[in-house]
Image (tube, rainbow, N blue to C red):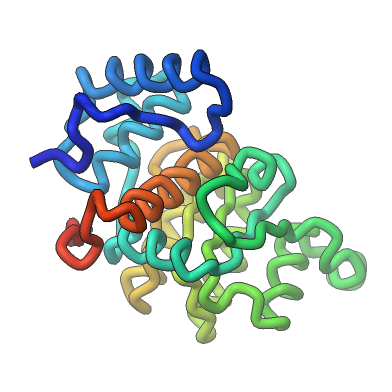
Length: 232
């Protein structure tokens, strides 16, 4: 049984015109020719392929502690969405949910100047001290140091509802995602990450949007979150 019947209309929550919805529907139909459509995790694999144009990206995603279910529940509860940079925030739809969206930009500048740590790391620490990440949907698409710092915060007791982390790059990016996977497994924090050097804010936003899509389907009674844990 598929997560979403193939003859149902796929209306991307970012589309606002019929033409855009038709394009989204056609695109996802093409993606389904290459990516399974059996589990909630498959929906995120489809979204990764759809957003990157890379069929092989479906094999690069990693899931920990049923993040699709945990993330969708957080969306339904109106939990805040916290991103590392404004680019990721700009890519997250404002439709289909009541979650406030904020970024770390503008926080921790004094701490960064005092300590020499990156502004992303300092901002993450400052927001963590304010309790912002507990129960939040955390989206990291750019800064490996934000991911590494968040992992340290989780190790120290912070508990996000779900973490979507796809920081891109050649320095610390793969390691930062592996670190998040490790602490996620150890402390029961749901995570969606990827392996390798690829990633980016566009991908992080797309995966976060799919959490919103899943929540919307649950709200509409199209799926039952209680019965849809994939065990991933």
